[in-house]
Length: 269
Length: 75
Image 1 (spheres, chains in turn cyan, brown):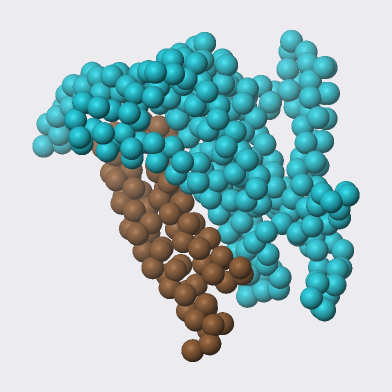
Image 2 (cartoon, chains in turn green, orange; image 1 turned 120 degrees about the vertical axis):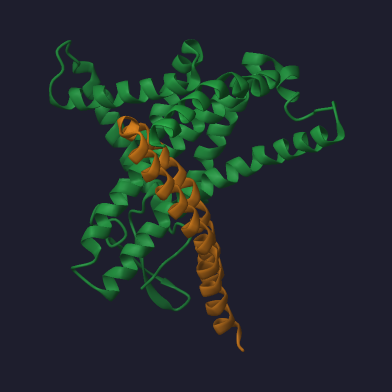
């Protein structure tokens, strides 16, 4: 059994290595290109495929708008967030298609023959997930700066009101980077671990156990795509918030749930 | 002890210890969510979505330890 953490190089164009995850990314892109070409034939009364896509787009748009609470910015970031969701979902699922990871070319590495698979899920390559994380971080930082202004934005990190607040600002600055790292590792880890799990279980209990695990991995692909998208939207919502508003908002909401919980407690007692 | 066996023990320890915390966390999240659904069944859908989100966060920590284990084993 061969498990490799990094994507393997299939062939080289000049000095530029083309790995199997890049090949799969092209396949995923071709699928989207096909869908985009099909979208020329949209009709006012949706049929079959158009119905599915419209449900997905509407659901994602409502989600974005409900978190952002600002129609203009929601409309600006919605296309990117929708692409995150769809791209991550399709590329995670592409690793579950039979043949991905098992169809390949034999290469001689270090004296013994090893199979280099032609296709590998793009999200099970750390480069792809980190690229997505960095795109997301760049976009929400840029949106934050352009919405509330550079000086207002840096006030989140440079806080001079008290010594404790100053360290909170430093921690906030560090957490901007740890966000990217956890973004990238969460997606990569979940998808890669799922693939390793399936290939290990196939050796232990063949035919029986892999089937339900396949279902679970499809579920994980949905959940991870959803988590990545929702987190990107939430971080955007946090970035476009002013520093003062951050403190003011929880107080407003606090009174209502409190009343509700006391009511529930009373009825329970 | 040679390096290879130390690596295997390290990998097992990384996963085994790293999964304890997220396991407890997921249990608490699911338990509390079920409690909330029992108290207030009308908002089941919202609670379920948020529960899955919370579980994904807790699970991410277990996944980090799994990645560390993979790195110990394969790199």
